[in-house]
Image (cartoon, helix red, strand yellow):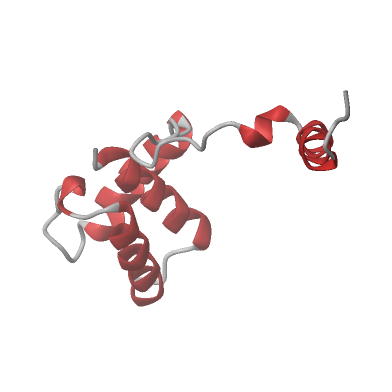
Length: 97
């Protein structure tokens, strides 16, 4: 019995990459659980910083992508630190399910 080189090469590649690399990607609608401390910091920072000038919006009003753009824009406008902006974004994205 002769083994074709193509399936053998595919098998070698699969072992070299590891089978975990061949597993299906996580569904886009399933989000990773946020760090509870970051979530709490983000909730407080969102209320403290954003609430000074805006009516607080429901996090479900925008998608993760939209919140990323909004937080990035407002970080500059409101002079919010990068860490605080990351916390706010994590809170908003975890809350918009």
